[in-house]
Image (cartoon, rainbow, N blue to C red):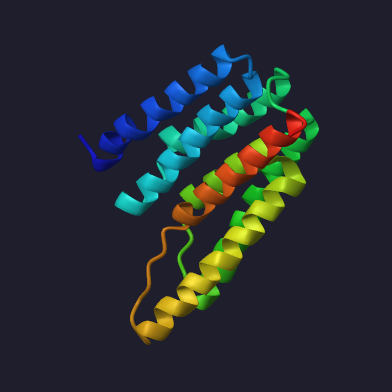
Length: 179
């Protein structure tokens, strides 16, 4: 069993339990946010442990975000969710090209997690989450380079984007509830 699957057994039941409690209390938006937050937390843990964002996490997160909006159980417009997916995949491609010029490798799992963020937060919310994450990643890379000049630096971008997306989910869910 891989380390990611081991962590999934810790994160996933917690997200399911939270979602069940929120659904039982009459908060379907909170229940959906809890499930999505669990998915983003699993992605962050996976990237931290394995430096990998598996398709088994990122693709269901993306499809789930678009489906939740389409089904009306998550706030937003379907066109906005689809635009968020497309724009943030494009941002991932641009980031990869720019990263190569700087000697920074950006994996396709990062693109997929960006797409999931766009699916759940829409175009503008996804762009804000991506921007915050890129700025934080830049600060971490700069600090790591300063502490070890000339040495290669690895950064698990999902460790940054995952929690930023969770905050976006919580803010979106609270806004939908009028909180």
